[in-house]
Length: 164
Ligand SMILES: Nc1nc2c(ncn2[C@@H]2O[C@H](COP(=O)(O)OP(=O)(O)O)[C@@H](O)[C@H]2O)c(=O)[nH]1
Ligand SMILES: [Mg+2]
Image 1 (cartoon, rainbow, N blue to C red):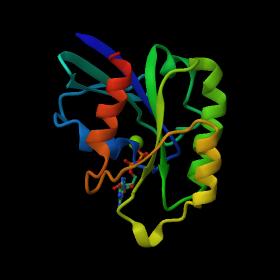
Image 2 (cartoon, rainbow, N blue to C red):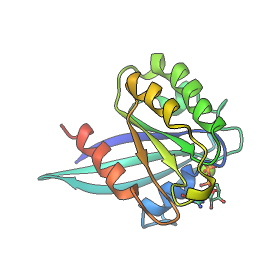
Image 3 (cartoon, rainbow, N blue to C red):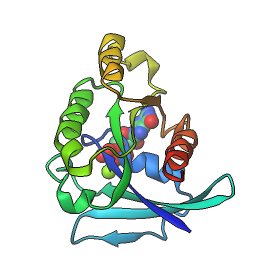
């Protein structure tokens, strides 16, 4: 079976852990590597006839931006940059992470998740900023770990890119 490592990246509190918990049904069967502060989940899905195991790496700490080290990223086939749609500064955190890891990882597929899409009345991301980043090659998806909106679809779409 294909195994693909996916890293979740983004500012504290954007919903990385919630997205993984929403997506992965076996919440309590995970490896938990306290030494490196990373929680690792696995989810098997199908892309056509191909079975793919996504190995989801989620930083389990508060210092998530500086925790993005080479050891965390090593071997990643793709990643998700998670943003809290109610906190525009988390989009800039994602941009700064992206600048730092681009060189580290090379051109592996990634999506930028505008998470907390259920919080429409608090939504604070300027469409113009999204357009600029789209022009730079970012692919955005709206998700809600709370309602499940876009979650399954996004992981499936990323897996499809990796299974080719
Ligand atoms: N309304 C709403 N709250 C969310 C969503 N995703 C995460 N949260 C909340 O945001 C907080 C931080 O989530 P967490 O997954 O711990 O963020 P992390 O630090 O990036 O892992 C928690 O209180 C979650 O319940 C979402 O899609 N919608
Ligand atoms: Mg977390």
